[in-house]
Each structure stands twice: as structure tokens, then as C-alpha cells.
Length: 235
Ligand SMILES: Nc1nc2c(ncn2[C@@H]2O[C@H](COP(=O)(O)OP(=O)(O)OP(=O)(O)O)[C@@H](O)[C@H]2O)c(=O)[nH]1
Ligand SMILES: [Mg+2]
Image (cartoon, rainbow, N blue to C red; front, top):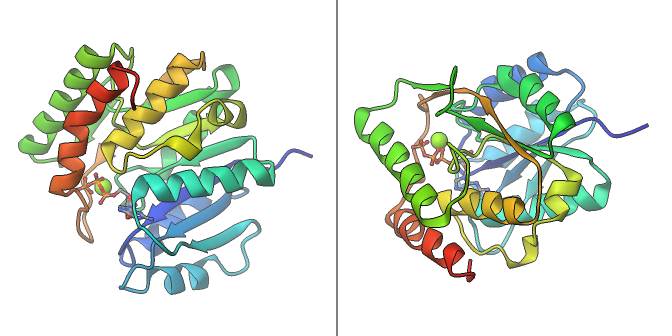
């Protein structure tokens, strides 16, 4: 029997979003396995997650130590997921920007292709309640990435994705260094150049209502630099 799809959610100070997130994920697909990958959040996210996940099959809280970062958390968790034998692995944010109701479509899309990217910028996709400044930044970032790297993806910075194990294994996770949006771009770029069949599925993205954004100056600077590194084979 193949394992059910695994949902991987990285967290840093997301205690306020966890109850709704976890209940909506199981409401959308009751049989999924769910890993919360926490980087020692000072607000007690990991302890709260453990309580909320109690009794669910295949659910666990992975408490990371050492250097924190979205990209690092995903790489560690993806490597563990491949070792554990998962064949369908979803990545999504904890802040409810990624609606668990999109999970079935995203997962179904990886049956015909190997990487499905939840896209805001294709037909039937969109953003809700995002300030114009963020919309422009996001669209600008996508245009920038596409012009520099040639990656044929409309929403290369989206962090709502479903991978087949085959596609994830084609990306060399141990050499991924980027931390923020650049991590998403780098992963898609590597997958594309490894010949992974890639598709985009429309999602409606909503701004976070609770908790605070971790978008920092470092993440922004990294996003400016990484497309060039990818283009010249150093990313
Ligand atoms: N494990 C881990 N998760 C992180 C880290 N930084 C951010 N995250 C999580 O990564 C996801 C995306 O982070 P957000 O802060 O929502 O970043 P964003 O979506 O770019 O920014 P907003 O649109 O302002 O919310 C959320 O689930 C965060 O909790 C980190 O250092 N470690
Ligand atoms: Mg967010």
C-alpha cells in the first residue's frame, strides 16, 4: 500500500494560525499525513502543534535545531520524507494564505506531471486582500525571474506546491542554500532543468490575518541576486 500524501508545513511563530490550519487540512483530505516543521518558535508553536496533532495517523512535529530558515526546514523535511518512502509531498505555508481546499486539485495534478505549482497568476488564480504594494512586488518578482532565468512558470515564487518523490529526488537538496522566495525559484529552476514535468494549478491566495510576516531585508536581497546565480549556473 502506498503511503498517503504528506503535507509539510514549515512554521516560525504561527501559534495563532495552527488550529484553523490543521482542522482545514484534515477537512479537505482526512487521510493525509502532516508534518509541522518548526524552528524553535519562541511562541510555543511546536508544543501547540503536538497537542493539535495528537491522535492523527502520520502526523508529527519536527523540531529543528541549529540555523533556522524556510529553505533549510524544507530541505531537511523533504530529505526525511523521501527516506520515509512518501511518493506525494505537498509544501504549504502555515498562515492560511494557502487554502487547504486547493489540496485535492494540486495533488491530482501530480498524477499527470511531477511538480504542480499553485499559481496566482494563471486563469482562475488570484490574490485576495493583499495590499497593492505586495501584489506589485510579487508580480514584479515573477517577471524579473522569468526574464533572467527563462523559467516558463507564471508563479515561480509560490510556496504552495505538490511534488512527486521522483521530482524531488531530481533536485539536489543538499546543495540548496536559498532561504526565502529564492528557495522556491531555485527549486523550480532545478526541477525544470532536470526534465521534471511541471504544471500550474490555479489558487486563490489570501493575505495572512494573524501573526507576522517573516519577509526580511535579507530575503529580499537574496531574491534579487539568486535569479542571476541560477542563470550563470551557480545557484
Ligand atoms: N521552519 C521555519 N518556517 C519558517 C521560517 N520563516 C518562515 N517560516 C514559515 O514559512 C511560511 C511562509 O512565511 P511567511 O512569513 O508567511 O512569509 P511570506 O508568506 O513570504 O510573507 P507574508 O505574505 O507577509 O505572510 C510560514 O508558514 C512561516 O511560518 C523559518 O525560519 N523556519
Ligand atoms: Mg505568508
